[in-house]
Length: 413
Ligand code: LLP
Image (cartoon, rainbow, N blue to C red):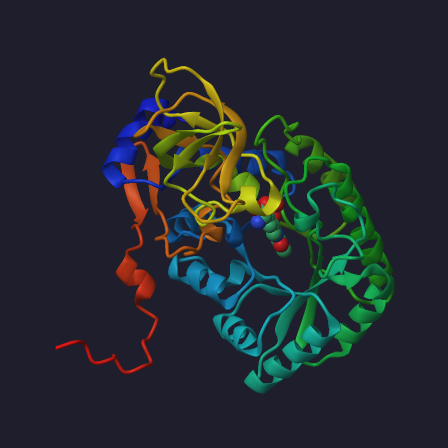
């Protein structure tokens, strides 16, 4: 944690910008990127930050300024990156359901590579590129069928998952792609899952991809890059922090003697622990069976606990010497699943600011308007202080796109 993220600063930030509030620390973000850059220094990879983790324009702008590329999964994310000043020739476009319109947009922008996930997608891309008189650079996302040992909802590299092209048909798919006139085969990629604590599955996936790369080379299909997908997991609670140096060393040994550029697509590990969510206690409700600390942030602000039973550490921004209780920390949304933490030891009273940790990734980017709740504001924190990078949504913003299609009934005179 940087010096700007000391506890007392949070109370002041909550007062200045209101709650719920996301706060991101530049120092923590720098540290996370540096960890990748130094571990992988000998391979000089293109680090394509996974926009889905946190797509705030200022964050993208910051990464672009540091020379990063971007992994995107929609036309919207590509537009974000371009608006933030990211260069198109460092954009990777992943995802299983790319629409024609998205393909056209990406081709016209001139992105670095389409990570293609199926044969029908390959055919569509070839046709769309042909119509535009372009050649689409492609990498095939291979499903290496390794168990990433993570939560089933964020595991993507098994045969049973919807992602990628099966290893058993990969060679045939490459031969097919190589013969298409409007695509240029440039690489190979995989992404086996997120919040990965064990390194073995990542290394095994790399091995399997390289084995395939060799077989393709024998058939005259020479690839220029290998993209190993997302990054390692982070510590939310008591996980063993994966050792990036160990991962990098293993990849370096495997790539040794090969002419392949390396691409990585980390998201969570670059921003996850650089962000917190600040929320204010509305009520402390003591029950017969359970206590509840009811706060002003909810599942629409941070969906991870409701969706994955994910754990986020929660603490009071100030230590006032209050007695500790065991309580569920819950939001105002009308769902039993609306909780930020269960059975937590916490000392808090009405008006206190709580810090929800590890909320830089898959937090603000997954927020919504359920219960017609405005999305939270976001703040960037660096040596020069705090800057608003997303203003708090208003009720007018939320209603702006909706239309009343019926004539208003006559009101009583
Ligand atoms: N590349 C691709 C193709 C991906 O699908 C993902 C994440 C990444 C890169 C980045 O992975 P990371 O470095 O962040 O592990 N909402 C879930 C996580 C979903 C991850 C989806 N794909 C969560 O909150 O845990």
